[in-house]
Image (cartoon, each protein chain N blue to C red):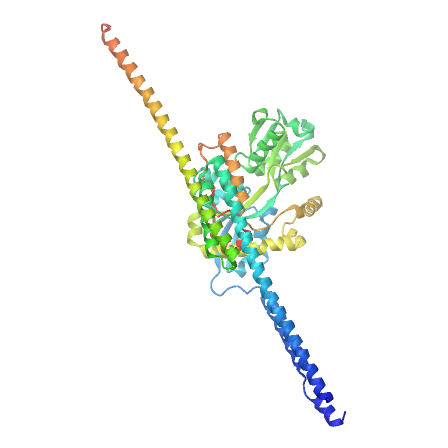
Length: 350
Length: 159
């Protein structure tokens, strides 16, 4: 090969080199587009922030999606300022929603079921939390509560018409006991620990976060029976129909924010647990152990409707309502918001 | 043949091979994408059919308004899905889809009959209840008339 021809071959850019360069450029472009699509969320939209109020019990772990959305700025990113109003039960939160003093309320399924039986104009816009070991019965060993069956003839503190009441009835039923075989005493959820400690009752049926505070206070004298396999707690967001109908865009923003909040609770369990500070070390350990069993997904499940109907049958049978027919719970679920924001999370048949 | 010519031919062959590989990759990607979309749509149809079957059984068991409403909603969305499906383009697939649509229409008619039968049954029950209570009312009125007639024959009480 002459020196001239060698220069000609090496001097020109060969076609495979051009092809390789093109492929390299394409790879860069693809990487760039991937990075762009997975970039940090857009900053808060311009304009005034929208104020919303949420009736909730922010010390309850089931509110993780909401507390995270507020503390981590997910609400703000959607142009919302969320004010949390503290209520000790879902029943009280639902009352706040119905009175119009809160735009949203976090409620278990039982208050929604009663809202249906009472023809109250509310919607569930999403379920934000599910847990199996969230409800239970705490008894005093020194009062003879040694086995589930030994609840027979005992005085049990409960908040009527709540998920605690439903769990207790189902639990007694599982032990082949009828509600008449125990004495039910009516207490507010926050008064149950004191009532048990003072000995006014032999056992209490309640839910987190009261369940553990009761057990903690009793120490060795206490025994707990969880309601797993009996009752799955479904924690929901409820709102007045008139509010939802007038603010469909706010609902979407709200759902996007709590969706990110729920993701945070799943992906960063340590940081999420830090949102629920506890003074007691054992409580911290317990929360850590239970965390993997908690489901923080934002969904609208067919199971919700079936649970509401089961509970309505229980309420009708136990004469906790004057109504005798089943409400149409499909009318108590707002599908459009979740359909627009997280369609894959909607399993309600429609 | 000159070395430079040979090199050029080798380059061209390389380019041709690369072009063929790219074309094959592109075509495979498109094919896979199409099959995935088809699979997804088939999954949606299966899900809808399962839901319809489940709701039919539930309605037969409880005759709830909610179940009926959900059946009608799902029936309409399945019908729309079958009519607007664009992924199934083969003759055989189109025939299956047409068959599915016809079956779905028939199932819809049967479900309407099931709902109507239940409503008729409820109406009959209500009519029977009304007739029974009207009969009791008539008996009571007759009895009261007889009693007042008997009383009319008595002497008035004196204080």
